[in-house]
Image 1: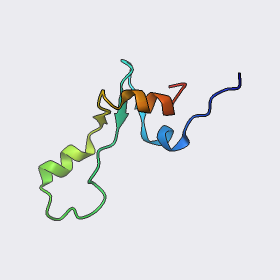
Image 2 (image 1 turned 120 degrees about the vertical axis):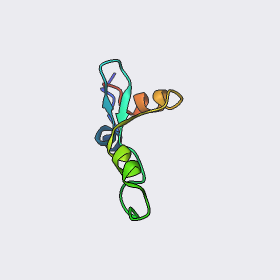
Image 3 (image 1 turned 60 degrees about the vertical axis):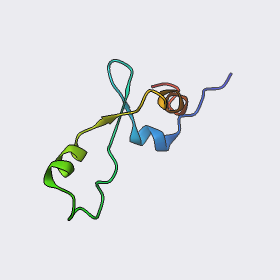
Image 4 (image 1 turned 45 degrees about the vertical axis):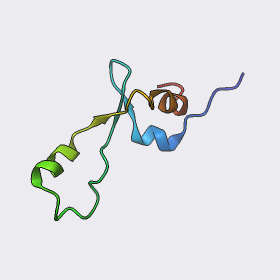
Length: 65
């Protein structure tokens, strides 16, 4: 059986944590930042985790992660 290919777009967006969860960046941080509060923008800088319902989809895109 040949090796499975990793989806490169997913590999650039997700990292695996030590416990096997997937880290991701948060959305809504690229533009139209004037009306968002500083607290909200600061919290968007922090990493988020992929929800458990999407965990299987992401792990299929990253077979060796």
